[in-house]
Image 1 (spheres, rainbow, N blue to C red):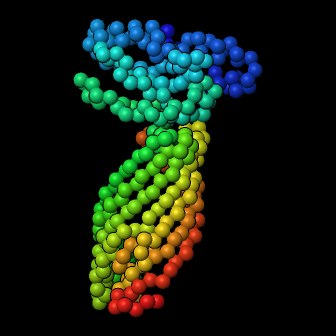
Image 2 (cartoon, rainbow, N blue to C red):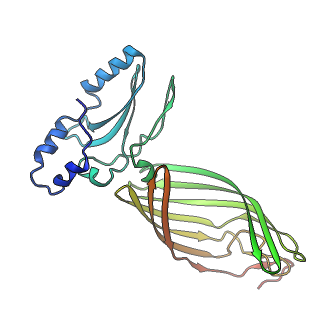
Image 3 (cartoon, rainbow, N blue to C red):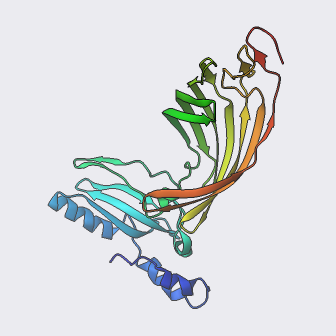
Amino acid sequence: FVPLYPSWAWAHDAASFAGSDELWERLWLNSVDVGGPLVERLVAVCRERKIHCVIGVNEREDARPGTLYNTFLVIGPRGLLHRHRKLMPTNHERLFHGIGAGDDLDPDDTPVGRIGGLTNGSQYQWQTPAGKWEVTPELSYGSSKTAFKPSGDDTSTGLQESVLGEYGINEMFSAGLKLTASSVTTTHTAPAKDTTQSGLHDLIAFFHGRSPIGEASLRYGVDVNFGLDKQELDATNTYVTNNSSGGMGAKPWVGYEMGKDNCLMGAQLSYKMYMGRPHSQAGGSCC
């Protein structure tokens, strides 16, 4: 027997912590030990029929006292292939389910393809798994136009590459570094000459946090940037020719994210503080 999902109707009464002991006892007794006989029966059927099965269960830890998790299992002829515990139980689920460790996110190779997944809402609660590093390379190309009336338009095009390394401190907090380089050429309205802004951007060190609110997330943190070089200007003292701010700054921020229909929506409020240093100008003068 695979017990039902503990719906909001159940949780409404259970939230009072009065008179719901029988509900919790029955849910625990009817939950599934992944190493137990109920899963073995499914494995036997998959082996007999040569099929693969993905099924959601209320999992009870094999080791007692046995925390409950909102879990999905991937089962095939070779046995249990994968177990994923929901990263963050949403809203009322926290009355019944524990928090997943985030160490079970990799897909599994099967004869029918790679199989993986997330439990409902987890894609909007992402946090780097505790005790692990994640390195994310990014490559982008952009083009923009700025209108100046009545003088004309400036058009900027260029390539940007960055590498982000993030370490999960625990289920709520992470920290890391981001390094970015780019080369952007701007075509100015005559008689101004075209300019190129290139090189390394400021190194960014960050500390981020996340607190779930229902199926959404309250996100917050602080980003600190360090100029790796002095800011450089062209000979006219008009255009910046490298990507360094030439100083350092800090940006505390808070935001709200909510996912719906495979879209992520949100807003962020931030405040940036900056301290500069003298920059260099082409030709050797300093200002």
